[in-house]
Image (cartoon, rainbow, N blue to C red):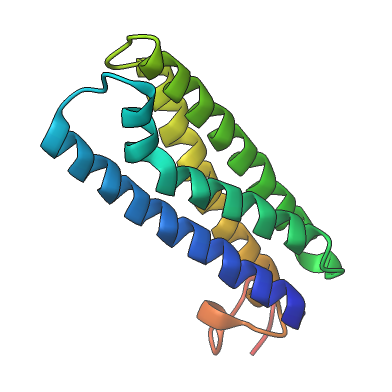
Length: 147
C-alpha cells in the first residue's frame, strides 16, 4: 500500500502542476491576447502538458503498484488523463490552425479535467476510505450495524 500511496501523491502533484499551468496560460493570455503562432501555444501550455504527462505516468505506476484495492481508481485516472491529453492535442491543433476559441476542445478539457479529479478522489477512497480506515464514518452508526 505504501507504493500506491506514493503514486497517489504523484498524481496529486500532477493535478497541482496542472493548476499552476492554468495560471501560466491565463497570465500568457493576459499579456499577449490570442495565439498567433505554434510557439505561442507552446509557451502558454507547456506546463499543463507536462502535468498531464506526469498524471498519466503516475496513474500507470499506481496501476502497476500491486495494490489490488486501488487498481481501478488508478486505471480511471489514466483513462481521464489520456482523454485530457487528447483534448490538449486537439485544442493545440485548433489554435495553431487559426481557431481562437475551439469550444468543443475546451469543453472536453474541462470535463476530462473534472474526470481526473473525480478519479483521484475515488482512488483516495479506495486507499483510505475502507473499514480499516473509517475516516468520516468513524464513531457514527452505519446502516445495518448495531451499536
